[in-house]
Every structure is written in structure tokens, then in C-alpha cells.
Image (cartoon, each protein chain N blue to C red):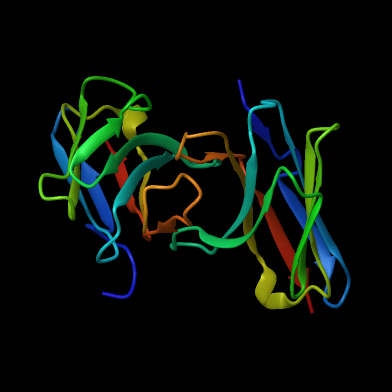
Length: 115
Length: 112
């Protein structure tokens, strides 16, 4: 595809349910980032992959959050036992190289609502 | 504790006039600054960037100014067009850190 795609675009979960959010980066992009954007806020960093290696997960808010990118392309962000404060838009971004200064291309996001 | 601050949640400008969006930062380790534009239900899209070794970068109607001593940057859009109406995010990064640190955004409305 031409850009970063994310699925589902919208997800409604009951409190306590597990959810899985998928990101398809631009083909060939080495770096992949996950961000969380709460209502009225800017995106906040969650975690970073370089190929299949998770190099930084310092932004994950709790051990209920888990991300993987097993083959260095598609990534999944999993949230276990969802809470209302997890309601947000989850954005995925990819960039071509390993440099911190490569442009990041964002997907449209997944809007998660936890009831 | 916000490291990147956009103190104006919204800005309204007449078509054809200049739009000035402001951003302040606190971390002196930041060496690269970016502006992203976001339409509803879409992801942010890159607009323009500036390295800390420069004080100005221009791309068409968009110019970013950086004042390192004041830890302040601004985005100028001249002339403003209705299609510029969107939320604008200021972002920063520093050193080997690849992730972006965003401000809360400023919603720009350009009225015809």
C-alpha cells in the first residue's frame, strides 16, 4: 500500500477485555513507532521497533500493554484487561531508515473506546 | 511535565492573511524540531522541520523560525488558505532518541 495502514479504525471494548491493534507500515520501512493520543492532547510515545527488535518501550504505561513485530514488518499492540483510561487514539508511524532524523509517516490511527 | 508547549489551543485567521503558530520547549537537548498537520480522522502529516543549527527554514508558504536562546519556535503560513484549517502539532527530538515529543496542538481555522 501507499501509506501506513491500521486496523481496526474503531474499537469498542468493555472494561476488562483484551484488544489487539494492528499496524501495517510502509513496505521496507525499518523503524516503527506506536503513540497514544488522548482527547485534547498530542501524541505520546509508547514504543519503538527497529526491524523486529523492540529497542525502546519506555513509554508503555503499564505491563498491560505489549507490542510485537515478529517479522520486522506488521506490528501488533496488545492491551490486556482494558481500563477506561486506555480510551484514546493509537497511532502507528514508520520511517525508512535507522536514523532518528528520518521522516515518520503516520497511519490514520485506531480509536479505542473502553466502556 | 510538558517538554513541548503550545499555549494557544486555537487560532482564527482570515483567508490571505498570515497565520503564526507558536511553540515553546524546555529541554535544551532537543536538536530537531518539526511541525505536523492533522485533519480529523487522519494521522498527522509532516509539514516542515528545522535543525537546531539553523534559525529559519522556508518551504513555499510555510516558514519555521527557531529562537534557541528563548527555546521558542514559530510556524508562519503566508498567505493562509481555507484548506490550511487543521490542527497543527509542534514536535521535537534530541540526540539518538528517535521518538517525537509533541505539544498539545493548535487548531487553526482559516475563514474565507
